[in-house]
Amino acid sequence: MNMDQVNKWLSLLTNLGVLIGIVLLILELNQNAELTRAEMHAMRADSKAERQMTLANSGEISRIAQTAFAAGFPLKPEGLEVLAAEDRFRFIGFLRGLTEAIGNWHYLCQQDMLDEELCQSSYRSQVIEVVPMLYALNVGLGNMRESFVVDVRRIAAEERLPEPNEDGSW
Image 1 (cartoon, rainbow, N blue to C red):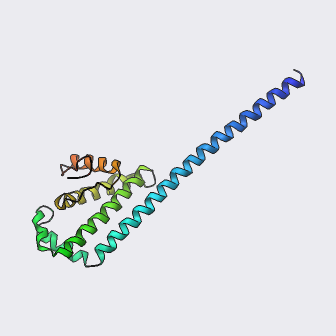
Image 2 (cartoon, rainbow, N blue to C red):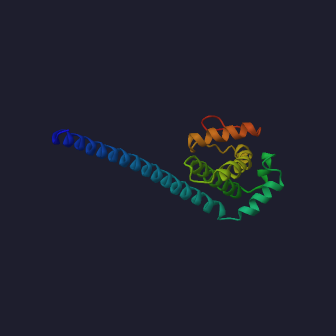
Image 3 (tube, rainbow, N blue to C red):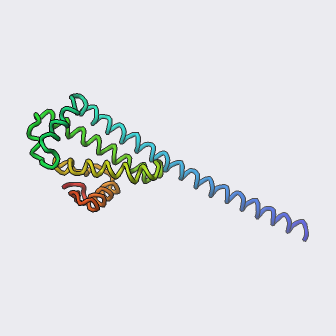
């Protein structure tokens, strides 16, 4: 083998190494972009949920919920009639904040950023708990991610709960 052929092989291997390095760099950048998107989504959802929770907690949300539950809510939607309009508004704000938090939980589970067991058991129980209340109040999921609405529909069907429509309305 002469020196010219050795140089050609070395050049080819060098170029191949550079190409592999570029591919790995692109894959790493893509992974970082996905993580950044997930973090931004979490921050935005947390901020929105915090605003709703602040609104709800501006009064005594535990007193409001206890009054509604004592009157039969959510099994009896008319149980909310015992609440003053301001308390009903706070309660709906609380449920929206809770739904935002559950939706964020769903997204983080999809991104494998939370423990699988937590995603399967606790997340599911939260959905089962909140769906009848959202249904009774006609609080839709229209502003939530489509994948979350699909998942809520699946869990509701499995648990024989009211199912939201595909657009998140009831």
